Length: 170
Length: 194
Image (cartoon, rainbow over all chains, first blue to last red; front, side, top):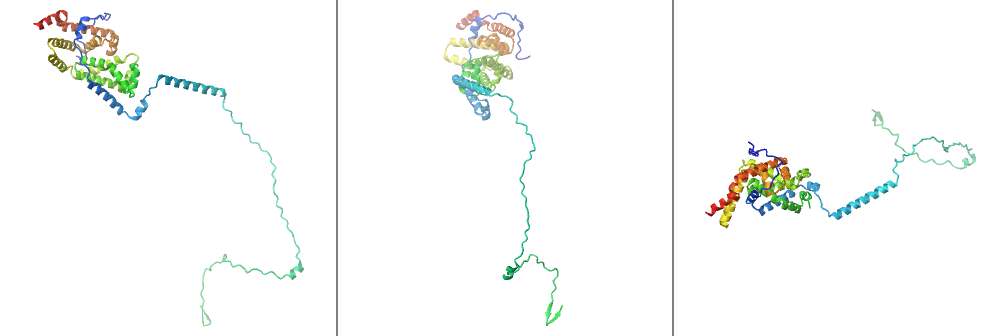
């Protein structure tokens, strides 16, 4: 049998019965009073409460924390917020908020444009030499030829000939 | 300030708010737990767990806020804790507390205190004789003066069932405490005088 079950045979008294006050029974029941709550219990409960908040991670405190504001401050803040929102909304509506103007379509048209072109003209001028003058003036001294090793190439095969006593021998 | 507002603040770490809630309801919770369990130790444990669970999981109360006051919510929590512990203890309740009371009475005053202690002991035993659900209804109605609707909320039953439990509890107590009612009480006092 379940511990909580009621074992009285009178299980169905009339539910509409008034619960009349049983003064005599109440007085007698008053004879049994519970003990007072000890201060150690109060202390223990407060300590447990504090400990719970000490061990609560900071992020959770941040997420679940709340601040209390005096009512006038809260009302003033709410009014300011409403006024600011109203003004912002009014300013926004003073400029028509149509669709954004689309940029004009770019059309490419070929336009002939005259360009001045430079023309290089080569002219050959023939000059008749002055024979008299050429005779009088000495021939100009040509500068010494410049030695340049640019075209120097070593021979592929070297043959050495040793001369001895005026006779050629290989 | 309302209990709901205080609970919000207490749950976010406001110790003063918690102290106010605790101060308001600790008596009810402790007395109810004590009368159900008949053990100071158990009642203290239940009171402790009851308030701590309220702070740990305030949303559990908030979900029932529409239909329950904090008072009935705490009573329901204390009731569940008490029944759980009583079941675990095999429905045996400690009687050490009474022995202490009796010893104190004997050392302080003569016959009157002894008689009071005896009646108190009888009432206590009679209540302990009641099945837990009847005991719960009787304690909440007679001692804590909760309405039938409130008791129904605490017990999770309908008002008719609570009324029926209360009715049977009273009938049974009248039988168990018959010697202490008016005519019986006179006999009892006379017997003590002799």
